[in-house]
Amino acid sequence: MVRNIRINLFIVTVTLICIGIVMIYSASGIYAWERYKDSFFFLKRHLSFLLIGTILTFGVMCVDYRKLKDYAKPMLLLSLILLVLVLVPGIGREVAGARRWFRFKNISFQPSEFAIIALLIYVSDFISRRSSAIKEFWRGFCPPVSLLGITVALILAQPDLGTSVSLACVVFLMLFVARVRITYLVSVILASVPLLLLLILIAPYRRARILAFLNPWLDPQGSGFQIIQSQIALGSGGVFGLGLGHSRQKLFYLPAAHTDFIFSIIGEELGLLGTLGAIVLFIIFIQQGLKVVKHAPDKFGYFLALGLVLMISLKAIINIGISCGILPTKGLPLPFVSYGGSSFIFDMISVGILINIARTGEYP
Image (cartoon, rainbow, N blue to C red):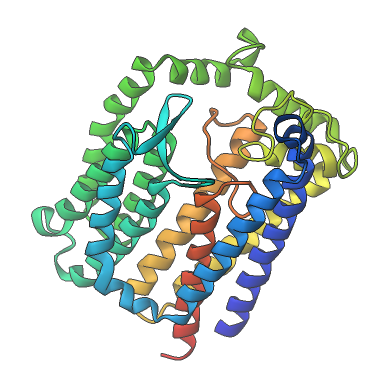
């Protein structure tokens, strides 16, 4: 039973990665030639990310996941240090007003992706250790929420509102499943709403994104451009698509076609059948991931698997929702499919941990 879960999870992940390889080349080839005189530029980089991710994933699979508990606090501390360092001019790399990356020659590293996994490991370890006190405010609720607040604040400073909100949602869902008092969770959520609104209102580009989401045709050449071009791509594909490689929106109309809006290119080239196929694969991934959660051999594995599945699922839902115009624009790649560097590698590592938990569940 558990062996089948591991096999299914592995097959679905590999299938999504293979779809991503094909679509990244299709979506980026012309742009890469125009900018770098090498149509394989992004594909070659993505394959290097895949190699790194594969090595790290198999490395994670070979070590008992329960040993992660011993490194939960050091990993979280290291992630917080990296989140501080990336904000320092001259250390962190700034792109389009955002300082989210370390740059080492031709390799970029996004510390927020490491921070996500580090925090999920810490929260899972905390819940497993403090299960008897989880309903208490000071001993059970404050420690994980305080560290979540510090992590979110540092990610917001980059700035990256989407990742911050996604991470907060996942941790709160984990605490909810752990049976933290609802009143504590609701109180923090209600207190956070004014702050969230303030963060949107004080940033012109965030206000523009919300207005574009409500009516992209108010500014079709500005803030509404991405949403309009994404919907044109999806609509142009029809049921069967224009054919692999025949997208027109990737010809410098749709920005970030190989990253944030790769789902739209899938819809244009492979049609409704292609997008439904991708969605079905993610549904199967979520289903198999939840089975790993159900069969986890201990509380730490249960909550760690839950957090990882929720994070990947939420990123997929948000990316697809943005491409379809049912959510405001936010730069989150489609897991396993988009060209994404750090995000892609840590998603692969997450699957390695899930398979590790499933294997341990089979042989307790």
